[in-house]
Amino acid sequence: MAASAELFQHAQKVIPGGVNSPVRAFGSVGGTPRFVAQAKGSRMWDSDNHEYIDYIGSWGPMVLGHAHPEVIKAVQEAAELGLSFGAPTSLETTMAELICNAVPSIEKVRMVSSGTEATMSAIRLARGFTGRDNIVKFEGCYHGHSDALLVKAGSGALTLGVPSSPGVPAAFTQHTLTLPFNDADALAELFKETGDSLACVIIEPIAGNMNFVEPAEGYLQTLRELCTEHGTVLIFDEVMTGFRVALGGVQELYSVTPDITTLGKVIGGGMPVGAFGGRTDIMDHIAPKGPVYQAGTLSGNPIAMTAGIKTLQLLNAPGFHEELGKKSQALLEGLKSAADKNGIPLACAHAGGMFGFFFTDAAKVSTLDQVMACNTTQFNAFFHAMLDAGIYLAPSSFEAGFISIAHSDDDIAKTISAADKAFASIGG
Ligand code: HOZ
Image (cartoon, rainbow, N blue to C red; front, side, top):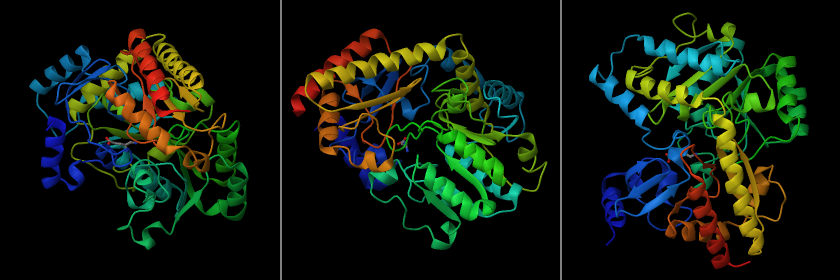
């Protein structure tokens, strides 16, 4: 038996489903998840020593490629000084300055240990700041697994078909209102009815947990205007897109300024990190400066800060995101022409180092309904043909793809050539 299969079997005896995060179990595509032994640059090796060109990049953080030598060296040196202090360090201020400089809407920032914590805390802050209870989220957007946000959620919740999870008491979600993503009329209608009761709207400004869905033209601007008009806090969840689609995230690309931004993934350089930050007058409501409570023993952990700081310093290099964007563009153009050649309808989208592709006749996918209507049978067959050819894509048609600065022209050419064969094998 192959090592991954054996390891998966063993894991299932002691870990629910054999994994510590559901999408990793290959539930929607079938087959055996690859147990990873090692990764370097654009490549990853499983426990059977199969080599893959990796387009997950730990679901976003590895924007420099895996095990970047400067990040590893910095982490090794930091580890020598101690792993955790539960007391402030200057590293946290350095990290905060790097974030505030790159994302102008963030005037102050609080570090936490995961994206889930970041969004959960941002919601509490928005409620504490406004004195209102109701919040709005969008169908298919995923903001981690806290109770109030696990309603019509994307990512693994969509993959498993439980977008609203059992175990979340109805009372905990009675203040969570949901809207379809990219429907400006529904948005205007809700604000008209109940705008003054809304503490906040939280949105993935590019949705990365129902594949990769960009906002319709003017949608984020409309959202900004409505929130301003009604005194509602606008939260951009840039846990996935932050420092990846552009240095300043989606808000830089679309020139829309949120009140609070949540971050994660890239800012930890591969270590467990999240953050939420925004306007000073809002952020100063957080304890100990203000009354809204939020805390964490491992928040601002020195090793995590070191990995994140080094990563952010390296991606501040001039032209970094332009180069990353060119790589995505070359990859997606190649995939699209290989699909066209083989008579497979495919729609593609990308921004900076993040991308999506859809098995659909539609020229562009903008809504969750369109995502749900895509051909998952073709996706699953394509996924496995690519995996067999050494190309590691997200094991679900509801997830985005990630490319790093370490992906070479040769990696991209190999991926396109494998896709050509995969499209041919799944038939038009
Ligand atoms: N929820 C993540 C994708 N959007 C997957 C996380 C993981 O399995 O590591």
